[in-house]
Length: 249
Image (cartoon, rainbow, N blue to C red; front, side, top):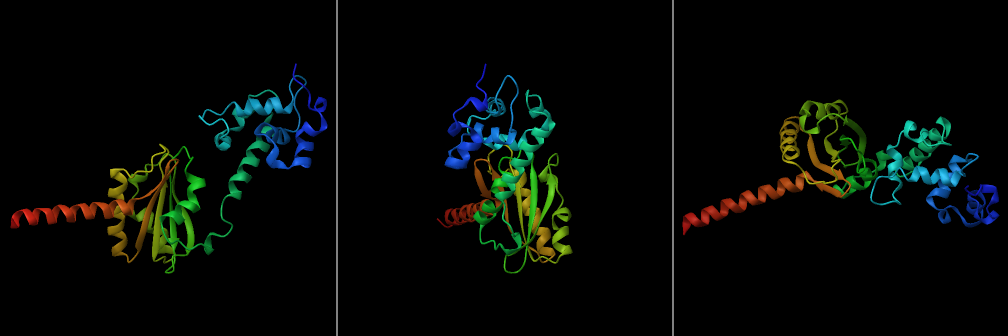
C-alpha cells in the first residue's frame, strides 16, 4: 500500500515543499501531483503522476514534451485521472507552450535564418505532423503576419505557388519567408523541398515579391534551403570553371 500524501512529513508534501523551497525544487511527479490535486484510496497523487510520466516513450525520461501530444482519452485510462483532471493537465501544458512564444510578433525583425528558428523552433521541432507557415514581412524585414499554409496530412512539397503567395499579395507584403518542419527529426532539405523553393522564387519574382529564405525546422536543428541553393550554384560555377580550364590546357 502506498503512503498517503497526508502521511508524508510536511516539508515533503508537494504543496508545502513548493511554498517552502520553490517550484524548481520539485520533481516532475511532484509538480504533476499538484495539478492532479488528489489521489485514490489506493494511490497517492504522486504515484498517479508517476504513472502519467511512465507514458513517456522517448529515450529521455525527463523530457516532458510528450505531454503536449497526449490525449484526454490516454490520460483518462489511468485510474485516478478522470476527464476533468486530464483536461487540467492538458491546459497546463498548453499554458507552458504559449509562455515560450513571443508576446508581439509584429515587433520582431528578421535578420537571418537563426532568427526564424528562434521564433518557431519550440513550436515546430517536436510536431508529429508536417506544418508549413509563411512569414509576411515589410520592407524592413519586420513581421506583419504569420500564416499557416498547411497542417498535417498535406504534403508540403505539393503546395502550389499561388497558395503560398496569396496572403502576401492580399496585404501587399514585399518579402516573405517560408518555414516548415520535418517530423523525421532531420532538417536537411529534400530534393522536393529544393525544387519547390526554386518554383516559388520564380513565381514570386514575377510578382515583385522577395523570398528571403525557406527554413526547415526539426528536432535535430534547422537548415536554410537558400544556403543549399547557394551551395549548388557555387558547385556549378566551380564545375564550369574547371571545364573551361581543361579546354584551355
